[in-house]
Length: 174
Image 1 (tube, rainbow, N blue to C red):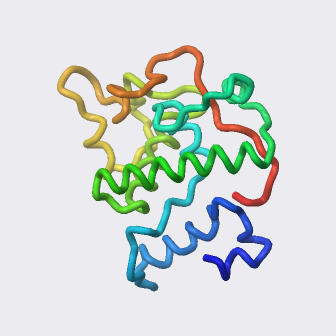
Image 2 (image 1 turned 30 degrees about the vertical axis):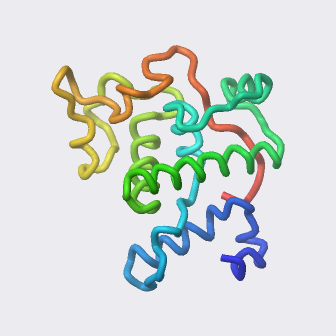
């Protein structure tokens, strides 16, 4: 990854593009890594939004938190801090769950992109036209009601009228 970061297209401190590229190479069987468990997740804005909402990442600074409720702009330092926190949360979950970071990334990315949408999340009832891939649908089944977000039972934002949004940072990093 150090080699890739020497190129402008890959100089993101959180390494979103580099990690995505390496993950693609691994997932398509083109490259094998001796320590695949250390290949981190390529954090994107869907994952930022979702982890802020479910509470795996908390923003303690009141000004920054207020901007995130508005989907406001952040500085480069704030962007890197937020995305690095999401990266660290996923890596912690990897260690505790035994699932690979790439597997967790795709789970979170798909749920947050399809179910925990920016403006109209399906917290308590999945829309029939959900775009969640079929392999994740079993996670939405609950004995006590209709299909809903897999994280609805523990999500800090479930059913809330006021939702944290992904931040705005103008860059070509991701």
